Image 1: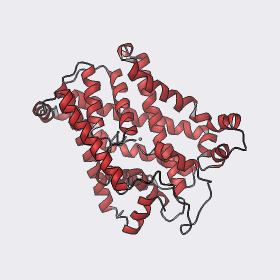
Image 2 (image 1 turned 90 degrees about the horizontal axis):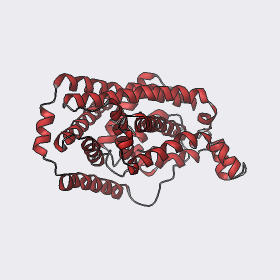
Image 3 (image 1 turned 45 degrees about the vertical axis):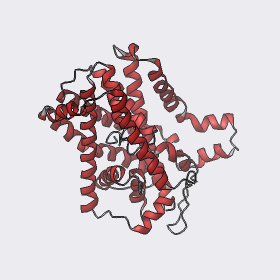
Image 4 (image 1 turned 60 degrees about the vertical axis):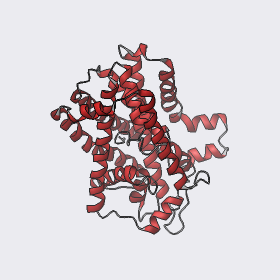
Length: 360
């Protein structure tokens, strides 16, 4: 689950209510269920807001962070080529691991595809995430391709939501263990640690038991309880072996992305303890996930600079790290564009309109 890495991870919370509203039935392509559109704000307005937010965050970095952009560019251009190449290659193959996890989850809801197809969908999703944020998001494109011709869009949506949730769970686990067990974890301000601890508690001790908690608190006849127990997602609460396997795959994938961060840090000559990479990368990824921005741009650069300078890294070097990471995400998206073009994944205008309005 990396968005890049940070691409690794934003629609699951917004879409989770849609998944729970699914009854799990197989609708026909002609009369399939519609996905509720949250609010009456147009897509163009939402996109403009996200662009403004991203620009505001970038501007605040220079206004209040006093970053010398020329020094940042110089640091990025003089980074160690060997370490950079290793980090880039690892990052470019990370969607393959994501595809393995998603293939497992999609199969559980009756959508079986080859690993090659799932990998292609993941790469194409990175392309949509960065270059077409106002038309079709990466996650919606994955849902579309996975369910195309089956009439099971909500099943596909559920698999993508759970796929994202698995990635988020591992990120939070890494950050929590890093803060609790890392030699300098006690020095991190509580206002940074508390949200991570609360989210981790919710993901590991509330979400897995939601059907039981809902039955006990609201009663089994309550509409919310019935939706939880009758939705497409019920298999993920019932099959613990499936979730454990997906969780282990998530750990492997996120370790790979952490190693990419370590490679970038070494390329820039940044001296950081390993445990801190397991704290600041997940923290940045979660921030990019919960904030309204264009693919995390702006908030990610601000967050990388903040977390790195907190450990004594110079502002310009910290921003160089963020610039390099943005470049890697862009490169991955370009590779996704190549897959999109060569794999004949073009979406028709009619289908794109349906995705925009939540009807598919």
